[in-house]
Length: 393
Image (spheres, rainbow, N blue to C red):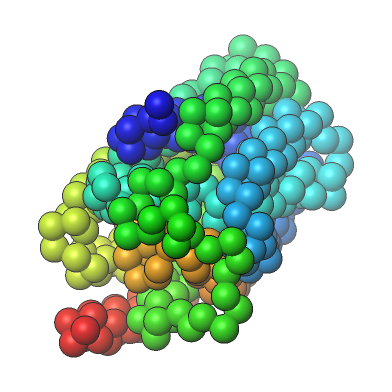
């Protein structure tokens, strides 16, 4: 017997918990690690921005290919495998260019798996509730995101700041990720059985190239891309924390832990809110994005801590509710393609945003803050237009 929809969501949440323990542990120290190899603020902003963009833009390829092949499990397992292999190797990188390449490669793994993984989850969430399903998955995800940086913080303290054994220990949960995925695939080889609107005979084997995605989907993608355009990466924030001597390097993962805890709370709150009130809850995201640089790039520890927590809340919305909306806007047979195109659109915003915030950080923090606020105000205007169209449907 296949797992129930909720058990499937919890099972996938366990996979994400273990995977996040691996790659969020590494991401919590990306800025200090690159700085130790001679990186400047601009380099950190560009590398982390390109990394996040790779995790998004490459879905333009993986999304349509997933719909065409219907090999959801193969894409999911391959992407997770790439990520959990890359992280331990990052710890022994001896040069800046090698470390930068590995940071980007880890994000490529996310690009490979995400359209397939999100589509698999969307099938189960059709029964469990879009916002609730993605929200619970993201909350479990963040247990690993909290645990990973904690492990890294302890290992850095024990090893005296040696990144090799610190990231090497993360290979253990990486093995568990692959094992859990293989088990899930055996229990539920075809999760589309959860989607009540698609009977088995109606499931397409090839996504129609000519099928048009709804206009609301494209407006929604523009809105999300704009919120990402002014959203600072944690790599740049952590760089500021160390270079500006706000906190010591071993304390950076501790702040990241707090951000991931805020992420989990925000994912659950906005997920349940979305199921109750619809897309208008998304106005929270540009507000949070505008507050991040205002607080996180100060030299006051209390303000910085508040900025990091708000950054975590924004990530929680991005990783849960935003994905749930796509599933409601697009039919199942085009959903992986839509997730790929959607990710590509916000990938452009992420790439430009990473470089822009990194450059403006070195030019002038007040100009950086003013620019981000202006972009987020414009994003709210786009969201208002989208909500108007949705009400007319």
